[in-house]
Length: 206
Image 1 (cartoon, rainbow, N blue to C red):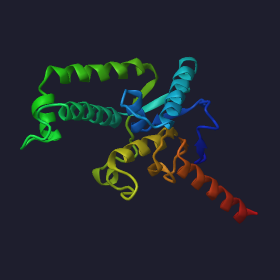
Image 2 (cartoon, one colour):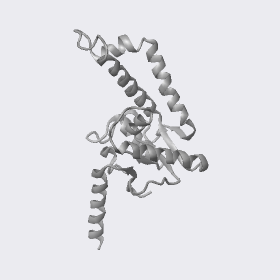
Image 3 (cartoon, rainbow, N blue to C red):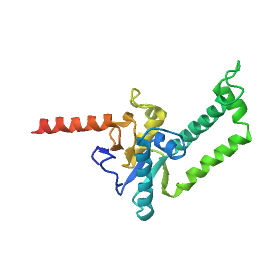
Image 4 (cartoon, rainbow, N blue to C red):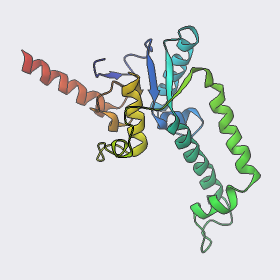
């Protein structure tokens, strides 16, 4: 697979291949609020992949298991923070969003209801997700050796899984750029960088 950057705005039709959706996009899919106009484009593309996968088994969404933990942690923290800011604990001495999460929200019935709500959201799309973990790095040392200036640990696991299964990463995050994987994006920074690199390559080879 050649490592390309595809402009989702110009190419909204999915291919018969594996995809990995960046965690931030999955968060919007599961209900995290956003006023960013690009979110609708990514979610529309996700549903297009979903539709194609229903008739073509070669089109699936790879889901590194770390993304399940990452999305749940962030969504539950978001729900807790919202409750904290609307509660009597907000601004009270000795209280913080973290303390509220551990001592008030997590032990509550509300927490269980919220967890099950997001669990149900995941299960709606279960048929197109393929749970996978990368087997490229087998030792702790290898797993912790990556581009620290661009990626965090979870992103590295996602990157390794994409490489192993030749999956395209759908992302609005430039951290995955130039990391040896093909990308689908609407982020102008990545699109422009890729176009500039192609122009330079063509000039060099001419």
